[in-house]
Length: 83
Image (cartoon, rainbow, N blue to C red; front, side, top):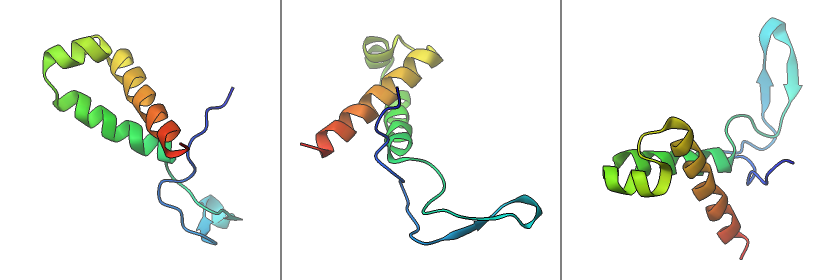
């Protein structure tokens, strides 16, 4: 099941992107989604927080726990946008 990703973080309407071998494809955007953008910022905050906070939210410095927590926070932010 695909989660709502919030669309592009930095859309470029009508942009044309060039790929290898001169292949040109029309895309409305390229790059990270808004969900990825929110998760990156959440991860930055988690890594900058105290060890106690990281342990309570994400199991200390466990990379999988930190990533899971960052995306859970991103999903919460996206949900709040729709309220």
